[in-house]
Amino acid sequence: MPRIAPPDVDRAAAARAAVAARRARAAVKQSIHDRSRTALEVATTAWDDPTAAAEATLRVRELLTSIPSLGPTRVAKAMEQLGIAESKRVGGLGVRQRRRLLEWFEQRENRGHPASPSRLVVLAGPTAVGKGTVSTFIRENYPDVHLSVSATTRAPRPGEVDGVNYFFVSDDEFDRLIETGQMLETATVHNAFRYGTARAPIDVALAEGKSVLLEIDLQGARSVRAAMPEAVLVFLLPPTWEELVRRLIGRGTEDSIEQQRRLETAKVELAAQDEFDHRVVNREVGQAAREVVELMAIPHTPSSSRSSRL
Image (cartoon, rainbow, N blue to C red; front, side, top):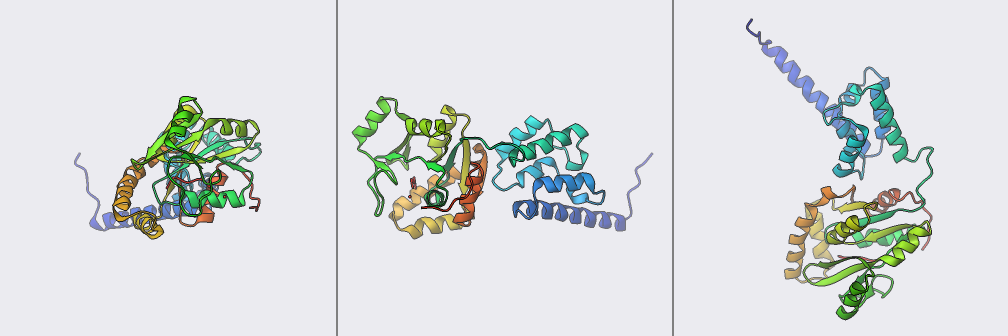
């Protein structure tokens, strides 16, 4: 029997309805990203309110990726762990899948669960994204976070203090640290100077129940992931590429040739963001710092330092 095409007016109405539905789902995702609603609230609305079409027709993958700082790698792992297919919509989940998703939300938000006594978090990102500024804010406002101090072979910049910003060492001393097995990770950054993280202080801090933050480059983050798979990797993003360029040029610590080289490196680094568990956009330093600290389950305690690889 030949298929009967709907009248043009019906097709136009259907197209308008489809556009409205997409916009409604986009608004739901934006509300999660802006933190005006939680993903858990959206999910329970989809299940409890028969009129909540936007929430119910949202794919579970879209729901999870809307959560601030939750990257695609982490979402993929969660979907696999929950046994939920990529195509599954929130409203179409079965009873058991809903229960597993609820438990996952509760564990993530530490509802009724004690926080982990210690956690190693690695903060990385492209040059000039503001890793050092964010880590400085964390040092000054979250004293319970242990910030690891890296060793480097480059000379101190104005205002930097040995043992606070970095341990400034010679090439020979850096070689000795590697040869004696003291380094958790090492990397050559921008084809120039070497950086590295000593493992012993980190092991001690974790054993004492402290949460540790490493602010390192992409190479170092990959090395830490290989050596300590339990580490949580966080990628710091600029709001836009133009803002990254403005920050690099504005700080005035490199000549034009070095700036261009660093921008080319930044493009490569940005392409690796999906390797990380979480992504944080550095629009405003305080907010970015809070998002990083949330991943460490550390309360805010005002108090009154830094390591950076920019």
